[in-house]
Length: 252
Ligand SMILES: Cc1cc2nc3c(=O)[nH]c(=O)nc-3n(C[C@H](O)[C@H](O)[C@H](O)COP(=O)(O)O)c2cc1C
Image 1 (cartoon, helix red, strand yellow):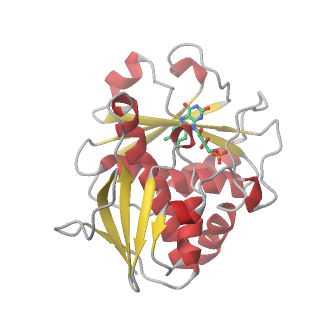
Image 2 (tube, helix red, strand yellow):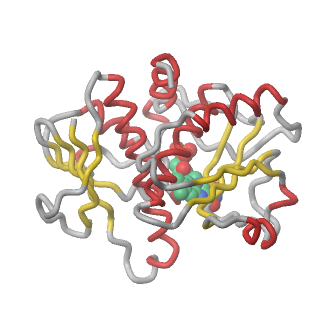
């Protein structure tokens, strides 16, 4: 990806929002080609994990859905390693790209592909991102328009404000914002909220995708500020955080 592209994605972090109302018309070939080309050059967290993105219309989607969109991107992945984190990381770049192009998108955890589509693929179905031409205001004017936890609630340490602010604004399933950060001079440790017993079934998968989304925002902010970005998992959790589990560490 060029630096210009990365800069545009970074800027989109502060303006994007989920779009749930779309014009019926399909995007043109140029626009769809741009999306496919963009996806082919996204950064992966784990390049060894194979994935596939299918862009389909509503006939390929199971049952009636609360969001009607002209296009549905169904993401499939090899189910190995931290593939959900990888999926969130990759697809969030597309969510930001669509916003930067003045198009609209929304993560759609409730959507499922039809059985035939699932059977066609060797890979596991992960999640859907719907997109199209927005039929509502598609960008936010300012950071105050984001409904998010304040930074003080989701971090310890005083370094890397710009990076954490970008991560704080990330979208998440039911706006759960399951992330927590501990900062050090050259590292950011990431923690994921432990879902309670009742929520576990749905949220375990979604929350891990959410963490991948927040990591994409962290990466773009690190790029913007000329810092390295290497995601690793330390052998031991750096410190316990009540109700959160250690997920990994970004080395800057
Ligand atoms: C993994 C994931 C799954 C989501 N699933 C749905 C969904 O099924 N239906 C829906 O309307 N919104 C869904 N959303 C959108 C969130 O509700 C939305 O991102 C969050 O409320 C924050 O709002 P914003 O994206 O406008 O900033 C999902 C978001 C994520 C990240």
